[in-house]
Amino acid sequence: MNELEALLSTARAAYERGDWHAAYQNLEHARSRSELSTADLDLLGSATWWVGNVKDSLELSEDVYHRYQHDGNLARAAMKALNLGLLWFIRGDLVIASGWANRARRILKDLEESAEHGYLIYLDASIDLYLGVTGDPAGDNLRPVREAATRLHDLGRRLRAPQLTSLGLVLAGLVDIRDGDPAAGFAQLDEAMLPVLAGQMPPEWAGDVYCTVIHACHDVADLSRMRAWTDATEQWCEQFQGEVVYSGICRLHRLQLLSVEGSWDLAEEAIARSSHELVGRNNWVAREAFYELGELRRLRGDTDGARDAYVRARELGMEPQPGEALLQHAEGRTAEAWSGLRAALAGRDRLASARLLGAGVELALALGRGEEAERLCAELEQTAAAFGTIGFRAWAAQARASVMISQERFADALPRLRAAATDYRALHARYETGRVYELLARAHAGMGEPGAAAADEATALSIYRELGALPDVERLGGRGPLPGGLTEREADVLALIASGASNKATAEALFISHRTVGRHLANIFAKIGVSSRTAAAAWAHEHDLRPRSE
Image (cartoon, rainbow, N blue to C red):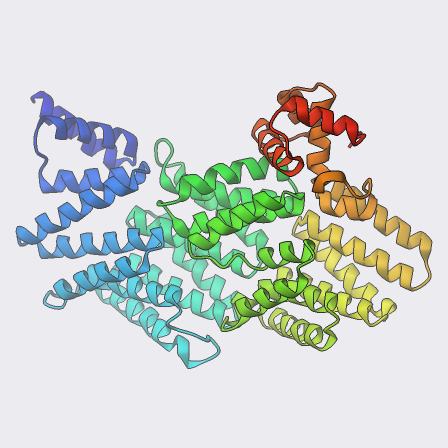
């Protein structure tokens, strides 16, 4: 065996065992010595995608598609077109994904029924769902996807292809969830994973199924199931050698859960890295990451950073609501926030609206729009009753309690707030638990129970301080208005810097990263109109800003 043959043999074996990095390196080395066969170039294109070089992978795979077509290997050309359609779909470019699906369709119409026909059915139905072709899922508009699920099930049975049956179950499960039956939907999604776990599905398609299940859990606020499937996906990724595309996606889902649980310092820095890494690899997840980053920054008082993250999420095709509206509300632009949130709600189905309704109740109450608040609250309660998940139930109870407090029905609000607190604790949702204790304080104060109100407010403040939710700390127990438009965190950073602390020492004192200190300093310099640490320190001394204990 000569050196080239040895390289190719090593590369093929590495590919077979999922060692994408070794396969990629050996195939690239072989390609530098001689032109690769179409089959080996196909392996290189796939390995290149797995190691994260998405642009190169797409170019290589398109070349492979044309080679298969030229050679008359139409079945392989069709499957390569379908894989390209899936990869463009994962990138978030549905128009190009649809174009590749159409190329596969033209080839397959003249070929005998095969597994490739099933992958086409799944890709078409997935594109339809995300393009919104199905519209309002309250009835017959989801029929095309249901029919696709049935066709996949039948095709899988005829061809004895469990991977097609699995894809049919994925579609059927998504439809059931959107129809308001998450129990039936998740039962089908759980069953769909069996062929995936058994290694009976191509890894690119298996990874998409894992992501689809986790997104479905997130959509209905089923965080316990989301944790379980994130664990399962991480274990699936472990079979591959080295860092691969889906490892980054798993990391983001894990960070989303850490954010809910209150590990904000760790989550913010890691999400900031992951969001940029995922752009071009999986834009669906990248835009979620930027939105999550915006939420963390908003809650921590980094207004400019939050706004930047929301802009990136919008550039990737996501309407950054309700976070953007809540940021505007915090800045005193409540009417603008209300208008933006109402526009975002327009045309959304019941499931997609659920995350916006609680914020809508908050904004409506702030504007004195009691009837609007009642309408949105009732809609959220109906959604919670239909879907029955613990997350939706907690949101609805909190919204109803807020409406009751606005109506001075303080005693009626208490049982709903206690139920919401119980559910949020079960979800390990720290910030939301703090918000409920703040509402409990308002209810007890309205009932003339100052001792209970003070205890509840102290609990809320303790949670906010623990999290680093500085706007809330400032509102409940902060040091009053700050000069120069500084946020509470920016004042802490400037006070420490002015006292002579280095960026490293400041980061350690505030439990934030060195990079976050640098971003805060850039914002501080811009706000107070200075260009050096010395001038900033002088400004801090002039305005009597001193370090404080957290």
